[in-house]
Image (cartoon, rainbow, N blue to C red; front, side):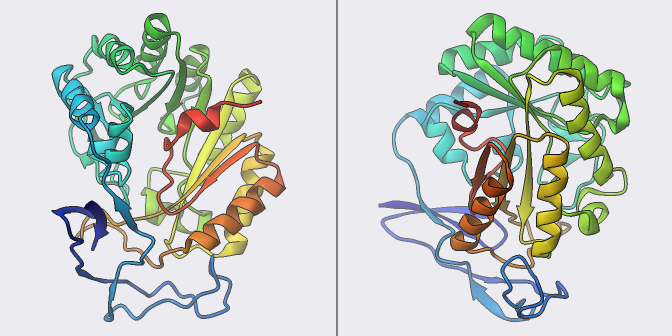
Length: 333
C-alpha cells in the first residue's frame, strides 16, 4: 500500500509498501499550561523534546490516473493552484477527484504572512487571458463548483478585483457551475470589493485565519482583524443572497474563549459557513511554528459548538482547508 504522511514541517513523503516515520520537534512556548484555556486544555510540549507526528496525521495516497490528468491539465493551460503553491496536504486527494482550487494573478504574493508557503516578492504582470484558461480547465475537469483564489496583489490599484470579476463571469459562461471566490482583504478598498460582489459569486470566502491577539503575528503588519469582519459584513450589506464563508487555522496558541469570540464575531456579520483546520508549518525556517496539534475529537467538539451557535455549515478537522470539499458545503438546503 502506498501511504502519505505529513512529516516534520508538513513535507509530503511517499514510499511503496511502507510508511516512512521521521521524528519532529513539536514546538512549545505558547504560554498555555494544562487547564489554562488552550483550545484543548492540553499543555504545551517542551520545544526541545522530539516527537512523532500524531497518528491522525496519516493518510493513504489515492491511486489512479486522475492525479496525472489534473496535474497535466493545469500545466498544459499554464495555470496555478493553491494546492501546489501552498503545499496543501489534500492535494493528492483533490487531484484524484479531478478538482483543484485555481490560484489566479500569478504565484508571487506581495504580503509576508508567517504561515503561508506561497512565494513572496515582486509579482509579474496580470495575464489577461487567464480567466478564459481557468474556465477551460473547469470545463475539461467537469467541475460543478469552481473555487478561485489568488495571491495578494497590493501592487495593483484594485488588488486584482477586476480579474476576479472576469474569472467568475468566464467560468459561469463556459460551465454553468457555481463559483466560490477566496479573496484577499483589498485593504479596505470598498470599490474593489464591490466589483467582486458585482460578479455575484455563489460563495464569497475570506479567511479570518486566527484570533485577534495573534493576528499581526500570523498575518503580518498589513492586516487587520477588523478588516476581515468589515469585508464579510459589506458582502451581506450589498448582496444578502451571496453566501459568506471564513476559516481559521488552529494550533497557533489560540485559547478556546478566543475562538468562541471569533465565532460570535463572524456570526454577527452574517457569516454562513465556517472551516476549522490544523495549521502545519510549511518548512523549518521562517514560518510561525506549530504550538499544538489539535485532536480529531477536539475538532469535532469545536465544530458542534459552532453549529450550535448558528453557522449554517461547518467543516472541522485536522485536514480541513478553506476549499476542501467546498461543493458539499456550498450545497444548502
